[in-house]
Length: 640
Image 1 (cartoon, one colour):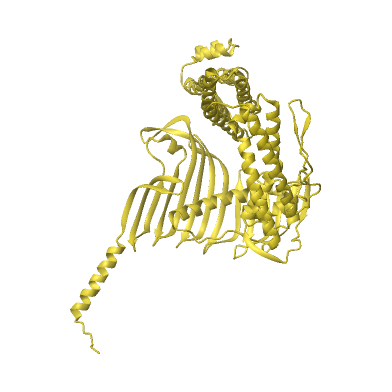
Image 2: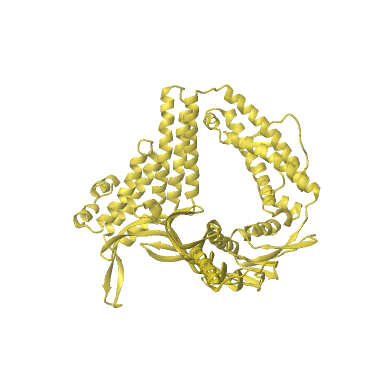
């Protein structure tokens, strides 16, 4: 055996080369440029090194989608900053997200005029240690007006250690706050309580015992209701995260006892909102390829192991559901049927039966399958689950809808398919068999209707676009119609009525070039109506901006303080009492496709003009307004 001998010089050279290679591999580089993280696209700036052909984040990191002169990007900014230590998020991280609009006011900042903004700003601060939350995790959502925070809409405060939430926590919105306690392993424990900020007292209490929710108390008006929980005939329990799935489980288990629907508001709402913000941060790091090691609240739930027979039954339900859901969806979204139902009573009846199958039969069935796929189903006894999904019992095989005269009209079947269904998965299976049969029959009947009303391809393509815009308008209005002043709500709903009247009139037209042109016109009309809906929804906020703009600070010698005083009251009164009601009435009563765009523009020009009048000499105008009682005259005086 030959002995290898190395000189001191050879060893030194070998070590020097190895060190040089390692140093080259570990050399920090900087990247600045376009970058995409999940759904976010923007500019990233970070330090990194290359190891085994992989990018290793190491050092400062920042990302933002705020782009100069890009108004759309800057109304929904996302700004993230923090640092990495050998590809693990480390230290303090800050997330800032917003949903803003221009307030119409400008302020001098560093000798430049800057647009002030209204909207909502979200700030999340997370302290991390080598990829694990360690220290404070803070979330705050503020309402902004003229770039200043005027109200805290949401706030949560947690302490973490080694990725696990610790001790007590607090979550609040602008009217309520909740406090809760956790064991060292993040298991829910002791009493979690919800209070009003007005100091009325406790609204809800959730009593946990080492993860098990044993009792609830809910204040309903002047009474306090108590609900005790039992874990049924479960032989085993499981520890899961306290998330939306857990709330679904408890809601289904309790809804026969819980007439107050405790899981629809209060603490549940606060926990769900916090969970979504928490998931936003977790998803960001996952999309970046540097996942956090983090654990949420833990709770204990019963576990009912599904039998092979139940698993097979659920698979059959899912197969039937997919068939029925596809057929019914095709019927309800068919543009030809949406037109034909406006002029043909039989088509309308069959369409309404399809809608009832969708709402009363398929939607609860879809929820059942969602619970199955989200691993919720095994934590609820089948009978409780079925009764939770159909609280009034299964719908019968006699399907009735209200006809155009307001009378109940039954959908006739050739035979009886079931009488009484069991309150378990076997009952749902029978119901799903029934929905397949009825869906196929409805599709066949409606196809016959369409075959006798054959259309040219040009009409089919254009009408599909028209119905899509009509549906989009109605969906958009429904999403806006929430806690609005009655007059605004009424005006928004009038846009739906307007669209329905236009479609009804269109359906009665003779099939010729004029009808095709009308379809194109209505497609553009319904699209423009969405912009008008946005202008209407903005009116209350614009009125608030105008009220603030028309205030001036005056010295009160009696209190020796500066006080806000309303100025140019005749102008603001004419705006609120005459002009805005005039426009809303015109929209509700006299709107046409020809006037939609003009009306939208007029509403914005009115707002801009009101802000401009605040700084003009308006003494002469105010004298004339004293005698003006016609809205059209007021608009002329406003030079609109």
